[in-house]
Image 1 (cartoon, rainbow over the protein chains, first blue to last red):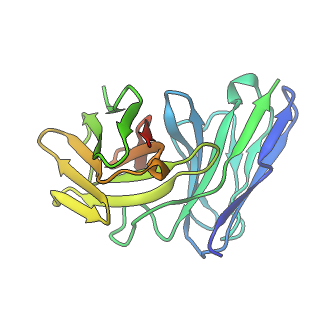
Image 2 (cartoon, helix red, strand yellow; image 1 turned 30 degrees about the vertical axis):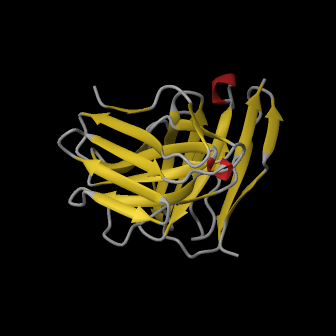
Length: 117
Length: 113
């Protein structure tokens, strides 16, 4: 089944304790992205990746890191989480970059609900 | 400033009626606009994409219009069903310092049996 998976689905942690949220897609998609969703603010892009070893900042990158060593995986790293990073996080992938003619949709993962105390 | 607005209030309609959701934007010139559906606790699911040179697009009971002069998209669900109850997100593709898709805050739709 074509899908985007994320782990963990739920995480409660404490300020300053490094964590990684994994994301994997099995559709051979080139473009991957991380979003956070907060009430009233909609989805905001954190980082995106055009392909392996190519990543760039989105709208709200502060406090986050990413890597893209393999095409299928795009982990999100919080080196020193803070309470303002409490949010619902989504990983998404698409066959091509949103600016290409062949682009149609992003496939989203099920989400990771993170609470930082 | 640039912003995307959707119906600020939740929308409640009777089963069988047509639901109309609004997406308004300011200070953007999107090449295309998308609509996604999101159920509680789940990721958004793509529904439709409409490009700037298209006025209307349909898919089964769904219809989307795109008016670049009014800077507005309307999303219609005809013969609505309780299973259509969800939050609907509009998203614009814009070219700024980098290409990106920007999401609106969403509209919650409840279809009452």
